Image (cartoon, rainbow, N blue to C red; front, side):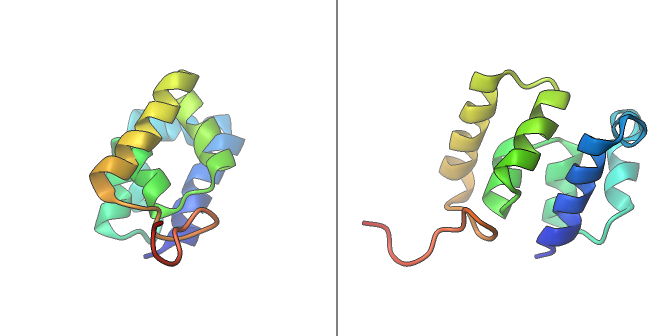
Length: 102
């Protein structure tokens, strides 16, 4: 997993209108500019907000990225819930699930 480059790609899209414009024009080309795993690149290209959350992308970064991609608040929350249901618990980062579920 390469969480840092994935978060950096999202951070840069959030911070720069030019980077976000390039992302919108070609998500695949945008994702190719970072050292991402296939799963990460695919999630970024779609964008699959739920999978990005499960992969460990920071919520502050993800919230702004989702909004820039056209997600309303409730759709953003729903996408994260769907990601958990489809892909399991958060794998890395601040929100990673540790220990056994109770």
